[in-house]
Length: 296
Ligand code: GUN
Image 1 (spheres, rainbow, N blue to C red):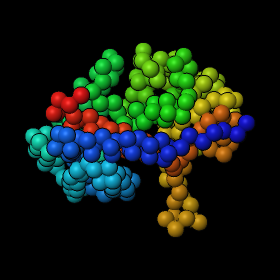
Image 2 (tube, rainbow, N blue to C red):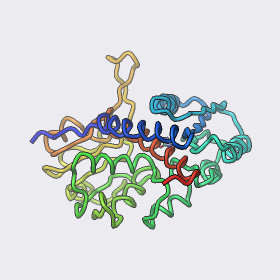
Image 3 (cartoon, rainbow, N blue to C red):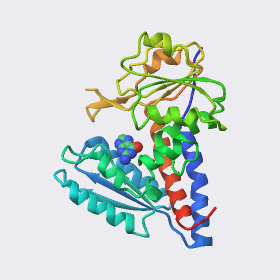
């Protein structure tokens, strides 16, 4: 078997075209332009690229983007004060503080400071709770993007066994919380496995859908995948590549070539989950603007 490729690029493009039309209508009918503030502290190379892409994507579909770049030695107090200011700013509907933050800053303190109605990352404990009880305001972008990829590529999630490799707060845990809900595009049996799981390949083999989010380059090998499984690769890892002018290339958490021969469908890296994350951020920003102005 050679797998069908689940193109995040293509699905993201489709969704962004839909959102662009929605934004034009918000402008013409309600005189409303959604606004997203993105805060970057320091110059982590991956973060710099992410923030640049977020800004570009906002501009392409008509969302106002406000960038706040702070030096790496910014104090926690100063960052908290900026979040407060953005919380009170009516032109800002969504706030995103790019992670990771420098060591002198307590990440949880900052995430908890963002007012939940502007928390377009969905990381505030209030929004995590709403997600868990199945009544979300904002779903976290990467997990929601994974769900949209499955739905829009015609994968039946309902009743499937989804096995997730990785238990982070950003991907593993929330993707489980979303796909286990009694809801359309969910209703799955969910297993989370991690570094302490015994006999990991035997567990991952159970997955009709296998989601890799462990942060280790090409960790998922063909012998860990059931014949005909759907494989979603959330990993983005920079590995050295002397033939590339940048000196590195991006690979996922899945051994793509080997697994492609066994799976029925697989998402690539790059061009898989990556563009979906930003797409769902745009979706949440529109939602935040509509919520603020009581637009259905
Ligand atoms: N760093 C890596 N992924 C993310 C994300 O989804 N949101 C934020 N704020 N930071 C990140």
